[in-house]
Length: 119
Image 1: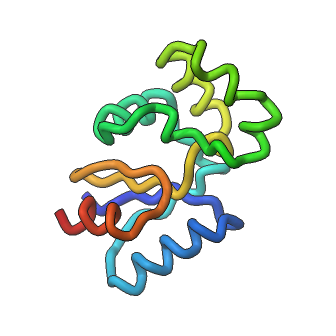
Image 2: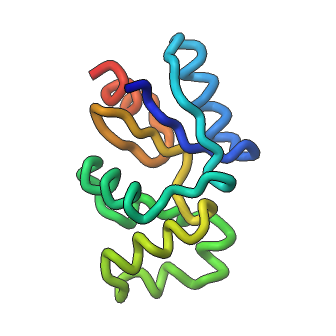
């Protein structure tokens, strides 16, 4: 399966990540996160596959995250509630989000993406 990259077109980090993939000649499936928000089921699978804390999947620097006061609310929420919240709006999800059969990584760090894509 070719990697899937969930991105937001106006996000400079997303643009940098997509450019990195293109420069490396890596074929990927792009998915606009705002228009095609991940489902709670997808997020559950990706979260488990990533081995990372669920908090890493939240776009903590985003306006919506701040407006909703999630910094204070998340610690008191259960996993299922957090996944439903993430699935409710793509702007809450950390992006770009790389999903491949080898792993999942929220955000862009070329060394991490290299591991996940190259194996």
